[in-house]
Length: 110
Image 1 (cartoon, rainbow, N blue to C red):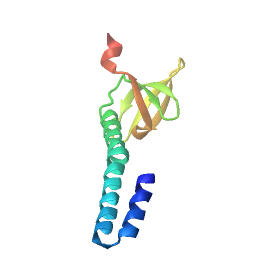
Image 2: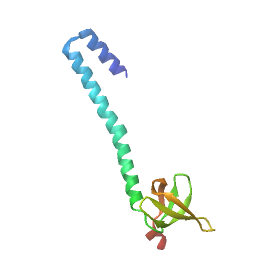
Image 3: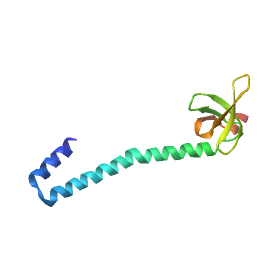
Image 4: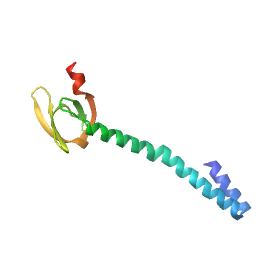
């Protein structure tokens, strides 16, 4: 932050096109840094989440964003039915509510 303030003071004192160019360059560098440290990792995480939700299979043990743990019984386009607890309670949830896959179906068989 001190670097930016000192550059602004230098450009104000020196005036001219060099100071303006330096300000534009600093803004561009800040935008690029914001993109690589903010936007890009978030897009990558969203892509991984969508890939995980699209690859759900019957038999996967999942955890929802609400903390419900269960086993997938059936899957439709946007929803899936999970079976929870010992009394075999079935709950219909949106695929977007799946937080993570704890155990894949093929791992549970082994």
